[in-house]
Length: 271
Length: 302
Image (cartoon, rainbow over all chains, first blue to last red; front, side, top):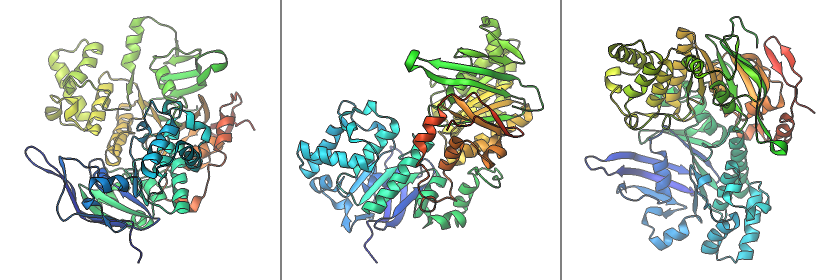
């Protein structure tokens, strides 16, 4: 068996409170294989994003990753990285697209300058080199290189989201984490972006950790899916299997609460 | 649109234009539809297609640039304030964002008491408090528990229930719900949809349900209209439009609805013609074709 790109073992994360701690993630373990599209589903507050932040080592107190937790990226222990190692780890090994990514571009810098920022810091490219590389990356996400001189406000929401994805791919990360990447976007744009990501990961071979609460979308695009409930990973399986034959009662109830576009309508009892 | 009962509210070839000259944008172009008691009409389309403009025209936040609104069969002109008050008592709105549409500095009781004070002046304070309890019970919240609370003490789903209760406070005949569930979790969404269905059935309300989520539209509405670039491109009975979509834009919209039965690796790239469909669908098309009983189309210019 090949080494998984991401291996999470017994991950527990608490948010420390004044009176009591909140157990956001409880003893979660899962693997993501090279090139795999892994979906993490669940309701608001179930701990999905907390896991994504832990993999990128973005947590600050009062979040506390409990002893005994282990996160391996390509065999390397992420939780043991020092600041210097962390700097080269982020973007190069793991890149993250945030939920409001389209608002995470700097409004006073051109698109080109924002590419250059990443490429100069991490790969030491000159302005001319980073310009050429940025043009290549924009083409990957179907945006004309003319846009390099544009400012974020001159681009639509979907375009800004694709630009962020292009910047994330700049250093060939092994794992792309996407936390609700299309929630703020229109359905048509959402489809365009996810199809593009699906093709890119097949061409370039990176893995994806995809977080959303839209189960239908998740089944459409993911290879495997994990369902979370109150900090615990309650079911992990192939996307098709988890859709056709969900095992956990919560997963079954989630499916029963999704209105159908075709065929028999759901009965309408809330989970 | 055909139907058995007389419409409460209708738009008759209403247009709304923003900007002028070459940069004029038709946010509504010859839009006609009717809302009938006990029925829900869904208005679907992507961002910027003019859905919210239609809602604002109904709420009389915008004046139509052409065409007219008919309320109980009578045209609404630029009428005086007193009739606007009567209109507001009959037509209410539920907004998309349950976090922004309630005042954070006031309790739930205050939010529900205001419309009662304004529109039902005959009620005594005691009667108002009773009415508030009834409203909260109707939206399945515990009156004693919820009435004294502030919005920040409630979840998104609970807040949306308060918004619905507030709309119901004036005993309206029409409710316009603009994406009422798009900001809610899957498990909470269904409760709100069920509530809308129940109100329609029990109170005989006419509902306009605005959304980009065709699957939830099918759950609450009998009729559907598909809007693009200010034009209703296809409309009619829900099952007929979803089962036999004729307009390329309707097909496009249906194909991008997340559907667990159609995985990406099986469907390939369906979006090849997107730009062409968008361009062609935006052209004004006065011609209307009836495809089936209660199923109409504005054919896309080739």
